Length: 141
Image (cartoon, rainbow, N blue to C red):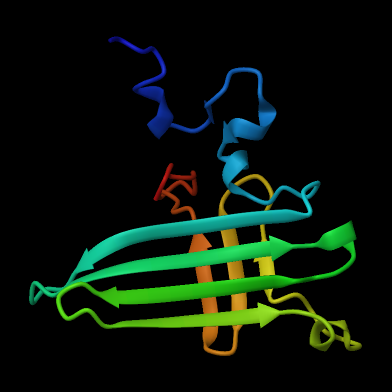
């Protein structure tokens, strides 16, 4: 079957559902300021140079009930596919700690394209779309 959209999904802009601005990429991958809750996640497998195999999952979750309360979290999990072991890490940005004077949200998400950071107790997690030498977004990278 020859689908005219089949080759276009790897190029920005891409409209998954014609006429639906919520599904126009790259904006669909970024922040949705009008939503009280939003989740970004990625899962995959990695193989070390030694051949050892791992699977991973990472989740960035934005929760802004009433657009006034911050209740976000970040999770990272790594699974050893060869030995069966695993480790997980989750950091929460929740009241009452984040309601103290001077507190800033740990999660920062750009509108218009995928670019986010989460400042956790273990360091800064970053997920952003790559750019080419002319600073143009490279789809799905």
